Image (tube, rainbow, N blue to C red; front, side):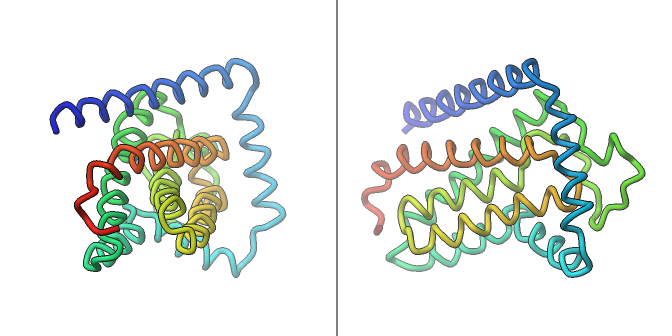
Length: 207
């Protein structure tokens, strides 16, 4: 068990390093922040409306602290059929938090868009941690990836919700598009990896 835990931690460390290296390379190849701001400004100028001003804070709330997907996992944990999936989801959410929020955010220490453009009026309370990658997006895609791999009928709507959560972070001007895109990739990678590692470890639990 200890050896398996060490192997998992080592693999997560390599994932973090790979994404970190890739992001650094992309920053050296182009002025990605300028592109990010161009996309954010297009969203504000083209899509912003009263209806979305009410809907997007609610959508983003579903991803806050992984509250929605943790609630789903806890409900599944109480059922015999989906117990193994629930355990993998909860473990994957924890792994995603470690990789994204505790490691990558502090490694990159990237400013959020509203820190740079402080004249923007936010619809939600501005987060105080760093920007890259989007933690909301990581946790949403971690959970959705596990569900998609194991139960596709649940996974497809979960992926759609994860995409909406990611978009809400752009609409609310609290993340750059590259933060959300990076969060999506990290979430998919961590969810896929954790499912592969834990599926065999939890064979005694019901599917």
